[in-house]
Image (cartoon, rainbow, N blue to C red; front, side):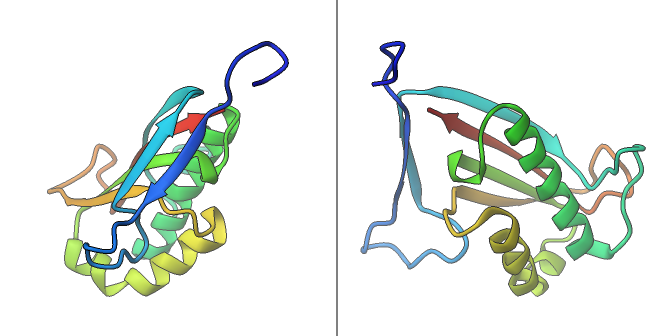
Length: 140
């Protein structure tokens, strides 16, 4: 318990041995106590509102960085992520860059993977955007 009598939260990753070994995600995530943070979809917009160059890898890095920046502003870090959804305009291209995107994830967010899904979409709100990430985090 914290000094004010509230119980701290916990994020626990669950990967049952009966399921295929996860690569870059967790099969299930449980959260107890704490505060939920709902993170809005983030694309590769820079501070001036322009999509950054660099194709899918560059956009993924910026979008993930933007998501983590919003999470930090709410008082959390990557270890608090329970769920992330990736919306991609080209799922085949996303799969082709999976190794590089995984390296970006590990560099920015570490190896505590949330429950994740990649969803193919026709286009995103920002027409030049190739990828968008949203998420749910639990803070102690």
